[in-house]
Amino acid sequence: MRSFLFSFLFLLSALAAHAVVDSSRIISTIAGGDTSGFWGDGRPANSAGIWSPMSIVRDRFQNIYFVDCYNFRIRKIDTNNVISTVVGGGSFDIAGDTIAATLARIHGVEGLCVDKTGNLYYTDIYSTRSEDGVFKVTPSGWVCRIAGGLGWGYNGDSIPARLAKLDYPCGIDVDTLGNIYISERAGHRIRRIDTSLMIATIAGNGSRTAFRDSVLGTTTGVRPWGLCVGPKNEIYFSDSVFIRKIDTNGYVRTIAGNGNVGCFLGAISTSAATLEAESSFFGSGVIAQMTMDDSGSIWAANGGCNQILCLRNNDTIQTIPSNDTLCSLDLGDGGDCMVAHFCEPYGVVRLKNGHIYISDYTNNRIRCIGCKYVPNGVLKFESLPDFSLTVSPNPVQGSNLTFSIASSSHDIFPYRVTDLSGSTLISGDTQTNLRTTIPLILPDGAYLLNVGLPPYNKTTMFLKFK
Image (cartoon, rainbow, N blue to C red):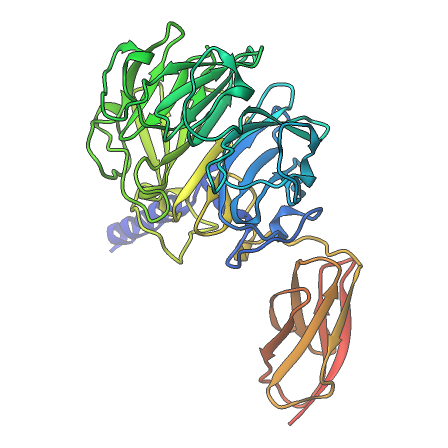
């Protein structure tokens, strides 16, 4: 009996130890939610609405920038977790002259990067394909076109980038010398824009089928999308079912992928990895963005497999999650990222502190691995005192309570129904500028409705009768 009890207690302790998850692996939502839309600028990102986020990058100060696709904006989450728009939302097309970035109109931004001095670069695909281009945003908030914008296609190299035609520019990054690299998905080329703003091809010959390995980059066909630059200015890019590298001598070789289509789970060698699957949004070539962290690991979002990939030392690839490849309503926030769920993730970036930020496209969220988690997936904030609270009708007759919060901005507020002693009876979250109705299965009497967080919360009394 004693031996059995000891074994049982040992098993319980082992299970308990297994259940404890390292905080660096906890996943949470830090922006967005179930409802897509635009609100929250100037407020904590945790209360903001976003709509299908795409590429996501960081600057040297560890601020986050991401493409808010169907809000037609590029937005920033600073180190204080405040969100703002840095590009877009305006009505002016960018013909090339410098204008204020928040007055600019953007169309189909895919690629995003930041250089060491804080300039932001992005690729934009116009719906008519007439002005596919590359644009630069200065730290002071001005934007101009630096390449393309003259119609789609190819009109040669060794010409000023602003006179060049581009063909579906998507991936973009910048090296330590200030040279800009872009991948042309439909042009089947990797292009370089040097510091004199002259453009040249460094890989691809315009063909998507004439694949060759370990040769000069300009002699092989490519199907590029995601792209990043390594610490020695080598170029990495996704090429259909492969990840390939262009060295500083201009030669291209495959570093990951076995040529087969599909998904895998866990950690395997790069040569055994399958890297592509069909996706309702991405179609083929689903590794849409790649970034490199300070340790030299490559991070990529494999949207068709609903996974994040980490390629370490060019020899091993690890998937996140490691259990399945399905979209799910159970996102897994607050738990281990290895058993969480994404739905067509587009971008990923790792910060110096180890936190990993993911743009979860179909879930309309920015997710974070390693950030502080608060239950319900929303980090509540101290609501500002520019709102009013109304219960109508009051007294309440029947079994429903209806109230509204009027505010100059769209925010998410916590609410509590309490008795007169302050004991919570009902609680939840609601949005401003909407009428909220909740079931009120309580005895007749007087109650308090409390909305917001101290010190700016508001409380009103209401009466309930049958």
